[in-house]
Image (cartoon, rainbow, N blue to C red):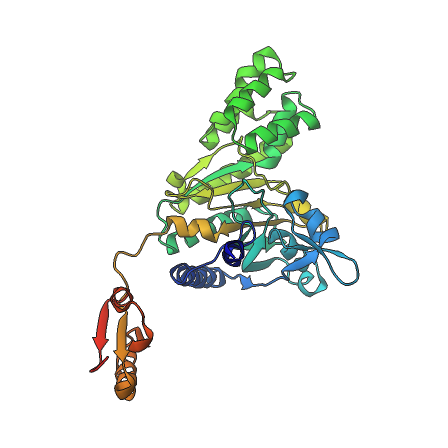
Length: 387
């Protein structure tokens, strides 16, 4: 009997319940975020919870082991969507939206990623974000960066900061150090995990010239865009052009007042492998994890047959809640306790208070087993006579 009772209250690994206070906060967060997205020209989109494994499952940057898979009645393998960028790229590649390029799409949706038993991380969580598809300019990158920052401010997260890198430029610099594709992947793995000790050890095993080793190890120390200049090859036109674009981006960021909140780290690498250009992560005081990430993913669009630019970001709602300012005062909430004799009187009183925009709960008193504890949940308690 005990085992049955425990199982009744258990949830699948990584799943969790949202109690009323959290659910309400999420609803407020969603409303503010969507409002700002729409205000800046983004249209809200909702994709299916289930996608085909052969398309979204394989294209997504999420490891295969983290996908929730199931079979439909026709024997096709499906996945619970592991991210939002891939499904939105699929939709944008459809005939419906091809003629609207550039297209701005926003979303607030659940995503699913299977977790190991010892992981302790959520397997289902909400993401809020945007995708700007069909624009390969640095102005598109600047737009999504500024929008991500604006959403944080609207949510009251003043401590937000951002780390910006560049996937393509980093790859070109690593090639200049004499590394091949396999060695670059090993370096990226250490950089993604932010394992500075592992990076140093790996550096000593790579075929890098002795004279260049200190410069290579210094990659993880860059905090300003001007620091990147030392690794830019003056005879490599692509590197020079990408660096010039980053300088223009920095001017836009500084002009918007975000300069002090941004770190330019050339060694920054995202775990989302489809990023092919600028990449960034957003942080906030009070959370040890990134609040969200974004960047340019032109290569992903090619998998849907489109040779166009695309950039965007996604914010983790659960982590945003962790850093949002807590309400200083308990919201006013009135309880009206009534009995059989004064049910109508209590109802009329509730209507009167609600017409004045007060939050009111009507409760039949005999149905409450622990009356004092229940009343303590409210800021005001009105007991009708006899209740």
